[in-house]
Length: 279
Image (cartoon, rainbow, N blue to C red):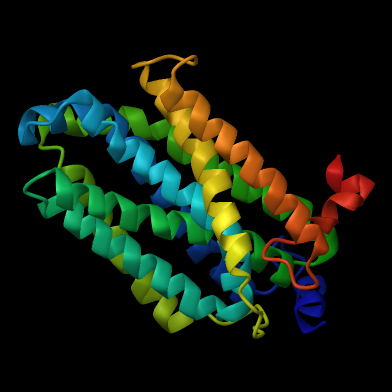
């Protein structure tokens, strides 16, 4: 109620100045995450030459990133209920900074992949968290404008990512892609530590292990299958593509069935019963 009144009084899209700062610092965090995702694709050939890996192995730097995001995003619904906004955001940004540093100094493929996985963990956590924060601090009549603003900022990252990456790897080492992002991540952490407030309510939801497993197999299987098809090694008819997708689809069907039966689902799918939401 207080946030709603602040929004009316200020007249801005995000309501009060404090709400604006909260949303902006989170948008900057998500922007850096998406920018970092698209930066690496152009640099894969340079990475392969530098650390001596095959194209199929290098592809895991992108596939692994997508897998972690696909698995984590549904689970974030539980994490947002369990932990405060501040704790979750700082943890996610801390993982990203640690992963960025690990990738920058990686002497070989192993540590580089670990760094990418840590970066992806942060991205998977921040997307849903940002949406929930906006819905919590922005008045109902301002949410469309707020989400539109966020969309413009976020889609700007993949638009400039490949071009920026091409310029960097043409004149510097591919490691500069990580070293360049690290100061921004540290700035966001410092700013959030002093200015970010808790805006979502926490509770003690129960973890349904079966839902967790089905979600992981479902989203992970589909992402892995489509990523394998995109590599072009076996094509859409290969077992490496068809089996993961089939397992993922079956797991998601079972996951959906279980969520509709649970009193406290891991991911509440009952919102799809509302016609406007489905549209």
